[in-house]
Structure formats: C-alpha cells, structure tokens
Amino acid sequence: MPRNQRAFGQRIEAEAARFLVQQGLEEVGRNAHARGGEIDLIMRDRDMLVFVEVRYRRNNGYGSALESVTATKQRRLIAAASAYLQRHQLDCACRFDVVAVTGNAADALDFHWISSAFELTL
Image (cartoon, rainbow, N blue to C red; front, side, top):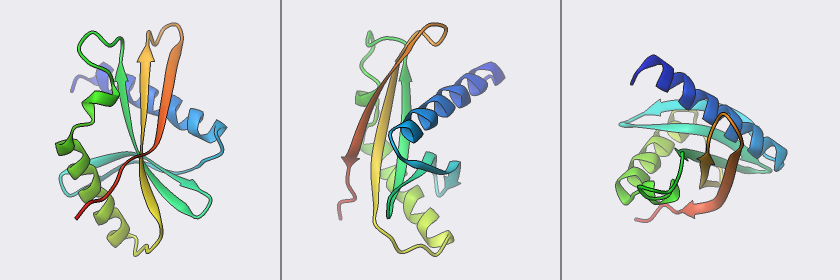
C-alpha cells in the first residue's frame, strides 16, 4: 500500500475512533495484527470489548462501505479477535461493529455505525 494511502487510512481510522468516543465508547487499541487479519479498532463499551472494522468509500458507485465487509472478511476478523483474546488472556463479552465512512475527506465525512454488525457463528 502506498505511503500516502496508508496515512489516509490511518486518518480515517482516527476519525472513526474519535466518532466512537463521542458516542461513549473508550478506545483500547488500534491495528491489532493476528492470525491472518487485522482489527482496526478495539474499543470498550462498558463491560463489553468491541472489535471494530472501519471501511471507507468516497461514494457508493462501486458498492457501499458496509457491503465490503464480506463473509470472508468477517471470518478473518473473528479469527484475529479470537487470537487477540487468547494473547491477552481475556474472557469477556465481545461484539463486532462496523463503522462505514463515506464522503470527501477534504470536506465532510459521514459515519454510519452498525453495532453488533455480525456475530461469531460456529
């Protein structure tokens, strides 16, 4: 990924984290790498650990940001979250949220937060 694209992605994630903090969540961590996946944001909502996938689209011309969280992506996030919980020896309630960000980053961004966007299914 080009350097300026990586910086742009980090900026979008920082804006999404700020948005979630404004909604009452507490930031725990960012960009946790584990077992074939990466968790963009790790937040806390009271006693619940929240794994957040942040998706950006300038517009919906090629599909929405929410639509880009495919079943394959969900499986990778679940695996990464499981590894994170094991590595940190955590046994707590958790959920998977998605923050879809759209708009022109130079102007205004629109945040669409889906709490409990998908679940761990066995």
